[in-house]
Image 1 (tube, rainbow, N blue to C red):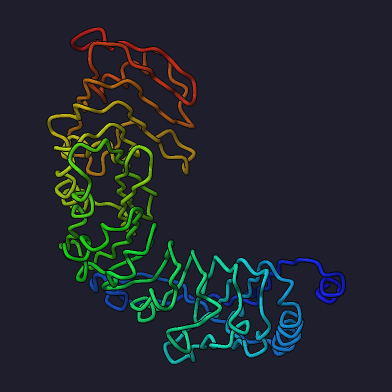
Image 2 (cartoon, one colour):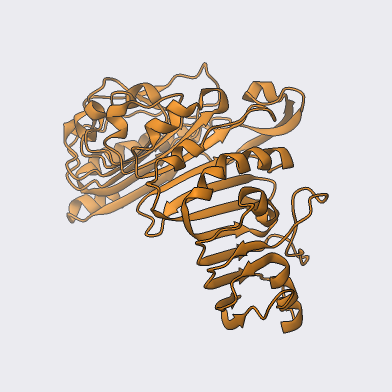
Length: 406
């Protein structure tokens, strides 16, 4: 097929994946191996693969064909799995190449890490904008073929410290766990996705990230007593800026706190890969106290987290115009609207006197108007004027009728 592309001067995209046929081995490790709480052992799955000699031959033949067709390729994505990649043949210019993804699966710190050669594509890939490198390093801080990259997914922090030289045009960066980022790199970026361990995440760390308009930080909390001062990110918003807060929870998986401008031009988010406990929610509520003095106009909240709103905003949210509540969608049972993480915590309605729109997404609920009114009065205290209720996409005009009314 690639020979046909060359012969007829066509354009092609190539995707090759040799990482299938995984052998899954389950064993028990302790959390201290993952920089977490060593008192809590748990099971994980480790991936191991055997290298099929036939696959090695196929890969060599494929790389020969790709190397010959490089001038005609628009996209190239190769995942070698555990097999050792050979990039020595990629020496022709790539004038059409816009997207490049090279992945080598490394399962041991003793595995060799392959270098991207300085001669890649003869130093000529003028329209290459998107690059993903996993399991590779760079042979030097300057690779001419990569200098036009705008969107970069790369897990080697030591090269990112010299990003203005290595990737002078990068604007969107996804990187692995890093204790710091250079100011030179951050000043280039429009967006950043990164991660940090809690013992490296101090106020200076978050202050440095605040120069990037769109930031998502995954915070690995080592123990239940650890706290991450992520509110420093949110403090960077000017005081009178209208803001949107999102509290999202994937059951058994992760917890997301995101603050953005209403037009989403600036977004600052922290992701915690933990199932939120009462203690975790308590210190997150402390970090979010800074939003009490800000103009919070929109709030998106998972219904499991609704019970924590009064601890974050004990006096209500005076400027709130839009409230969106998402019920869980991964269970076949109807989950009560109020489901605090700690069942002993009493939940009281959140006061929002200027509320104009209340959106409730509930894939399992079919309540009567009476039940819906009772649920609303148990969860919010809107002003006495009208507000728009959007229930599963259907609009209903609602009005608070007085103390205790629906």
